[in-house]
Length: 434
Ligand code: DLL
View (tube, rainbow, N blue to C red):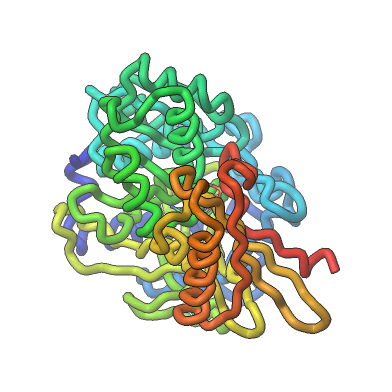
């Protein structure tokens, strides 16, 4: 379902002409109003007038998350504080929070892009949208909320927590769409199972899941358990919030990035060189219309690739591949690179194990150790020890075979791994404590 037919199907040439106009505009605004950007342009001897083609963006300096922290809280704002109508912040795992400020126009565009995203998943004004992303400084709740209202759907602002009550509300209010992190959706599903609310019996039909990495295996598992079509939504608070890119239900072959508002590039995370379409690297985003905190060449640390080939849904906006994870989340175990999602896929494909897992990395002497803790499915928990041991062995064998690392697998009782209210904590890296 297209929300803004004209913008979503702009012919490539028109889209690029619009991007160039907006790129020059954002460079002008950043140069004129943000001392950090003025200094960065001056240092390399560029002025916004030197941007003559989209390709020229490659000459511009990057913006790093650390730059946002260094200018905490308002240092990168491009408009007077009075023009900022809302603040959000992401705490991250280390260091100072990163603050983002929105003008009224920024909020209006965000609602439009979140509405496009929900529509791409198939949401219409007839839907009852249960938003269980956290409301607050986190952008998930209010972002999805704004989009659902713009679509004209009935919004239930449930936020996180109170899982049993939420499952009942979903039943009572007839939720047809669930918006939350994939791990919280499963947490809600479990609470439903415990309280006699089977998601398959509800009118629930669509899941809009994001804010954390998840695998295709997890999608299959959730669709089967919940009787829904699950679509992947991407965003980050620095750049806006949910709705920067979204999978279309028609094709589900990557996430359309709303290119009339964001200019995407993929770079080699080490050299910083631009990579061609199709190659995996770090996503770099330039905000083309944002007024409050415009960002030029923001290094997201998220790993993906770009696809400019036409999509069956008719949208002309490029697609990013399902996110491989953040470069910061990549574990290096005895020199081998491993992403939690790869382990997730093997866990879910092993049969008999649940979606609740945690990866514990530690060091014994000079060697890294990898433990995978996985809860056994409720149905299999009563099985004989022998059968459980064989599950453990076969998962460890698959991890060795497919990922090339030795792992100790520990099967756990159902409900023994802590559930999260938002983003799941998949990795416990004890090496950092040593
Ligand atoms: O997570 C915004 C959001 C809310 C997106 C709700 C989608 C739905 P932050 O807390 O700033 O903002 O975290 C942003 O989360 O850089 C990615 O590493 C990760 N992330 C977000 N969406 C996805 C996704 C929100 N679909 C960071 N797949 C990003 C994988 C994702 N990772």
